[in-house]
Length: 396
Image (cartoon, rainbow, N blue to C red; front, side, top):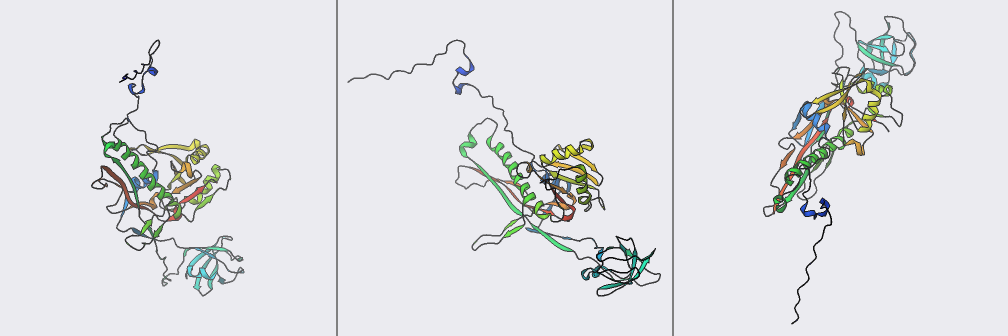
């Protein structure tokens, strides 16, 4: 029998001085930083600020409701031309209900004051020229109700008030599952324990999902289908909730004057407005917006620490109409770089269904599964009240 052994592989020779590149990769100790860097760990300013400034509202039903009450309407419109001495003034029929006997009205065009002595079906009997002479009224003149004027020892007039109107939102179930095999849990890795690092990363992503819905969610209910399924509810976010103060520059170059004209209206209403509040609101915006605003207001910006514990900072701008805090929103940069939202945080609440606030749930794996499963879970939403106290501004 012919027997011959296989030849041995010749070893690799190194000529000259040995360098690190001459070693096999398995022998070189990798210089791996012992921490995994997370992308955008603080990407949720709305969620952070609503929770820390006001706290969260605990709801007892997936449908959380609230009541709002508007201010008294004071504008009325003249219907048809009136002479300087007419004592019967016609108004647009739908606005007669706003007027009461003894109301004092001011014509915004002429400045004339009139006293209402009787309210009829389509007109009012008035006393003209309070404090002066009567002035001809034009069709469409706007008058405002200043208040009332009564004679001594007279009876009170007609009682009027404003009906409250209901509003509601839904909480939304957001789930972020993740897991590890048994061997993964036992393997030693650079950058620290895989379960620890992945749990931190998933927490950031879960918060980002919640923040996205708080901005761009739309209130909706998908009914239960036949069988065992239940309803699916969706929260209505900031963008969906705003209906009144929507400003679009339409490509017009932003100037400080234009920005202040926007604030002239947007800073009026709400507890954070200048008329009856603190005169402070928050402008949540992208990096593109911050570039524009910094260029316009660079000499009047101040740095303000909103939360010392987390080092949350923003820029403070004192405008002619109140204080605006510029809050960067990293989530806007990629997909919504041209939108900015001026919010009165007195009228925004982060909401969660009781016992179902954001939490890490463990032991989600099957009993016979070789590994571990987890999930971040939230049944929450956002409550945007007094929507006219907020505004949206778009660059293009």
